[in-house]
Amino acid sequence: MLVLAGIVIVGFLSRLVGSPFTWYDEAASISLAWLTYYGAALAAAKGAHIACPSIVNAFPPSVRLPIALLGEAVTIAFFVLLTVTGWQVVQILAGSTMISLTTVSLQFTQSALPIASVLFIIAELLRLPEVIRQARGDGFVDHELEEVGLGSNMASQSDAGSVTR
Image (cartoon, rainbow, N blue to C red; front, side, top):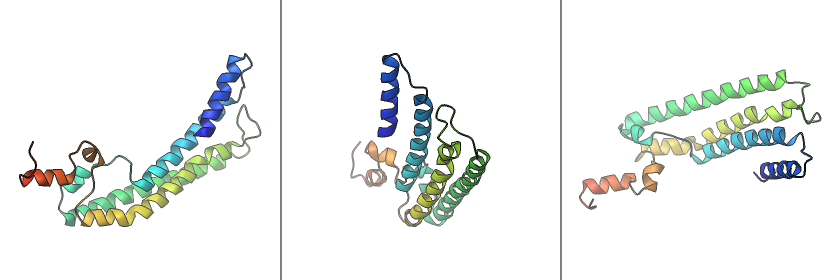
């Protein structure tokens, strides 16, 4: 993120003094793509991607586990496909370089997609024991409801009459 900010600031300052660099916007775009893909893989490792835990939690634990495993399998299959396709794109770009920075290979710049896809798969596999534990146990945590104070414990407490509305 610091590299991206540095590139944008240098580009801005070069335009301000009337001698803009030709490479800064292309370098900033590539940096943003890398930051986005690697940030998504990090979010996957933390289980922070969008989900519908309330829907999955509505099912009994015996059904919750197969649903959760199906979701994980579909996600991993998608990123396997993205890895393979991304690798094919990288191979097609052999010998090509960036327009403004001819010393930088497009294979290098576009490798963010297959690399991040592999990281995403690893993150999903590492989280699998936690997903299985939650599916077998009390269910998945709905972080959005927790943020506003309506977590799963809140609902069960209100049913017991211990929380007033």
